Amino acid sequence: MHPKLQDCHVCQQHVCGVDAVYKPLLLGSCGRMEVESRQSYYFGDIGCWAERTELHKAASLGQTSQLRRLIQGGASVNVVAVDSITPLHEACLRGEPQCVKLLLDAGAQVDARNVDGSTPLCDACSAGSVECVKLLLEHGAQANPTLTSRTASPLHEACMGGNSECVKLLITVGAHLEAYDLYYGTPLHVACVNEHTDCVKVLLNAGAKVNAARLHETPLHHAAKNMRVEMIEALVEFGANIYARDQHNRKPVDYTAPGSPSAACLHSYETSPMSLQQLSRLAVRRKLGTTALKVIGHLEIPKLLISYLCYQ
Image 1: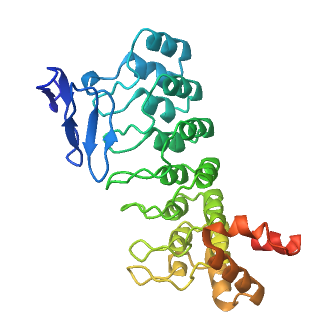
Image 2: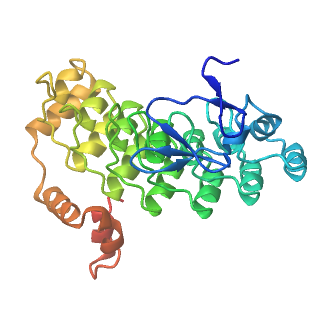
Image 3: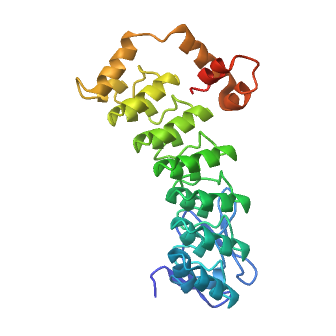
């Protein structure tokens, strides 16, 4: 028997122990397990805790016919493996939209959590499957699930994988641009660390705080460390502080190789102040915040100026 498995005194079935972050509460006849934290989450059918099932395998491999047969045969779509992964997690992680639809239509819990607290939407964003993300959101998936010390948000996951289309989709449904992860920081930090310039630009245009800091380290510090000139330029154009110092009292330029294009880029910004035109654009964007793109498009000003304000 798995070392964490123990007998449930209610239904006499083997139940997997979970991380100490989560406190299981047996409800009724063990029809489900609710997790006590700041908010309650559903982890699936507690009476069905088992090793990876045929349903998990079919969902993971994209075997829609097999999955349909199993569901029609009475298999529980919310069965969870010992790591609390449901078939829906598997289908999303593999980017299998047809399997995702089958499971959701059969009643799969759209916001089920695995032992790390990740939801199927987190997995779909990590996989970069726009179709899966759309299906989950249409079935009520939370774009902003409550985070734990071990959980990254769907937006973090999308940025980590460089999946800019998923980032755009999440932003349109209200994903928090400043969702803070204790290890990674904000989604913008994640995109910069992983060198995903497209995601950086999407986040900045949506109004992400360019000077957000984690241990005094800004996204520009990460871009400088990775020596990504295009990313550095985008961050500075959106108002990144080139003089910001991290916990080691180092500026972004201090992380670049002497004589490198990234060092030259940052030095040029230090010696050449922004134009009044650029400063005016920053002032407008800061004032409008996350509503900038929506508001600017309706302003009664020349189209050329609208394009400039939208960084087009």
